Image (tube, rainbow, N blue to C red; front, side):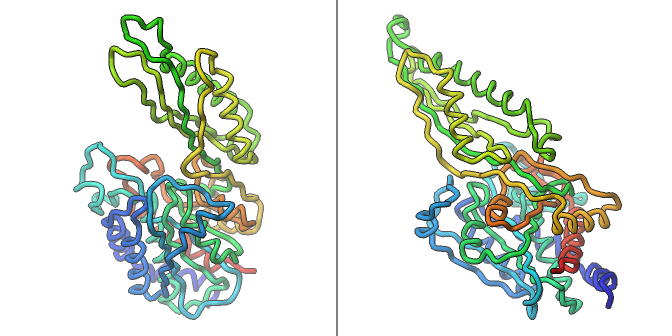
Length: 414
């Protein structure tokens, strides 16, 4: 068969009902970061049931945590698993990684419709549940793309491997572990939810914690004390000013088109112990960006400088520490052979050339780019619904994504 005929045969073999069912099955397994083993093993079982080979790997946490490039963690964990799914009998040509995470954030406290966060309900063309769009649905689409190719007996010109990973939400330890074991890939496709834009740049993100000290006193004699809240307020304003400054001149073309390429957020503030007592301690935690082309060390130093510039002399300097995941930024040459191929394929599927884009959030893309592996992200609509109540993804988007992956696999040549 010609390439076009091979693609048509594989696309025709795509089992759309099974794709939706398998995506729903993955969503029904709670897999909040740190507790992913069950969903990893389910993905391996689904892969085998669909005619693929699958291996579950348990990674050495002690060795990973001792690694100089350990990407950080936020969630407690005692074990780390990943799955590799491949097509039987395929082992020639360039190696293509299709990387997707199976860990999710917690359901939150807002009310869910459609049966709750783990319902996996399909209603009016949408799959509902935590992880449906971020990104269990996309992982299922990738699996079914490989299964459809295998079903029709087409031997692709490349060797594709689906990597189902854990720990993306808190730093990327799962992908880091997979690449520590085997980084011999020639390209990588990550089907994150991009609205079918072809993403070749991502900002990084780092988390910080600051402690502001004051001096306690009775409320009736507050002038004898120093309020840690009062000391903090100029720091909060300085972080807002820092966000404005870093977004005034964005030179990276794919990032420049975003409304807010590099957000800064203080997400938690805790202070005081009693309404009639001057607070002597305030704890604040937040997220800062890593601009494309900026190192994590440079990003940290810039945030520390912004905080120091607003710290008064009414008490000790603010104690700033860095914890959690360290998401570096990343960029892939959009005019390179692999991004051009993905752009061609997405254009064929969507009927119009896709937009090239950058994203303001951290992703596992940067772990591949750090190893010199050209990496592109493309996937369904709905990133704005990720991490929210009633998270959902359109089933037809998952079907379109599966067709895109089929074509990428069948067109990726040396």
